Structures are given as structure tokens and as C-alpha cells.
Length: 112
Length: 113
Image 1 (cartoon, rainbow over the protein chains, first blue to last red):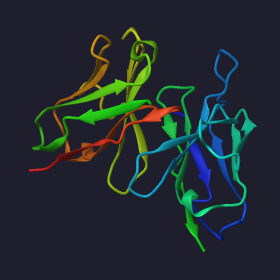
Image 2 (cartoon, rainbow over the protein chains, first blue to last red):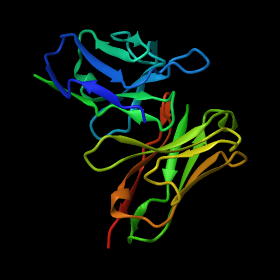
Image 3 (tube, rainbow over the protein chains, first blue to last red):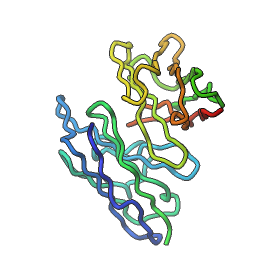
């Protein structure tokens, strides 16, 4: 199984601050079609997960451009510029390249 | 607007069965593979099962293989998860999802005597 190592486990930030979350996979996430199926999700308190970014760097519909994703192969980063209160929650990276699909353990973003 | 609405959850005794449903709308259901993903209370996300658009390909997590069955009815825009021989460790919020796109609100399954 592909192990997704997500760091840090938690972040305490001030509104307006920028932060980055790292996600490293134990195997390359490049699929046979050449695409990389690494995605970022946000689970706000009491809510179901919501897709933020798909295939490494593509912004989901309605997602503010304060969010950006970069990376390749086994090393990926989510950056949030100018954190806002609505960004609080748990961020997960997820890979759907290999079965079983696997998720990072999550990064909890809290207000300082 | 895309909607995934799960139903069928509840409290069930260990060893018993339960069937979850997920009604999809707002997209062409028959064009997409679908998944069940669960989240135990206070824990992270765990993929459970996937089914391709035409049901040709089906995959399960090792933790549920042989006990759970994923299926779909494209005419009814509905995804199913038949769960048998339930265990306490199956207690979780079960999401119907296209994980890189859309998630349902989840349905709670509690396995307890």
C-alpha cells in the first residue's frame, strides 16, 4: 500500500499568515496515463471533506486562488496564502493512483 | 448542483448486516467510478471500496474484503454498500464519494451490542 506521510500534524496560524503542508508518498503517484492523482481535501469542523485541489495543482471549482498545490512524483505541497478564518479545519492529501486509495493522516489548521 | 445523499445507516449488533445507499444527482452517474470511504469517530479517512462506471472493476480494502459488497444501479443513479458480519471496528461515518471531486454528507454506522 502507498503510505502518505503528511506534515506537520498541526499548525497554529494567525489570520493573514501563509502556511505550507507537505505530503510525501512511499511510491511515485504518476499513473500509466502520465497523470498524477494526488489531491488535497479540507474537512471543516462538523462537515464532510471538500476537494480543494486535484491532480497536484488544479484548483477545484469555487476554491479561492489563495490555495495552490505543487509537486511531482512522491513529494507534494499545499500552500495557503493569507489564511482566513474559513480555512480552519483538517487538511488531507489523498492519492487515487494506486489501489488501495490512501490518505495522509491530516494536518489540523487552528487559529493562533 | 452535484449531490450525493447517503442513507441506510444506524445501530446494528456485531455479526449483523446493513445496506447503505447513495443517491447521486447533478452529473451523469453512469460515466463515473464511485467509492465508499469511511471515517471512524475522531479518526482520519479510510478508503473502503471502489466500483467502475459499468461495474466491470471492483476493489476492496483488505479490512472489508469478503464481508462488504459494493454495487451500483445506473438506471437509478444509486450506489450501494452491502455490509455483512459487521464488527465494532466498522463503526464509522460512511461517505459516498468521487474523492477528487465530490463527497456526500455521510451516514453513520454504529456496530454495538
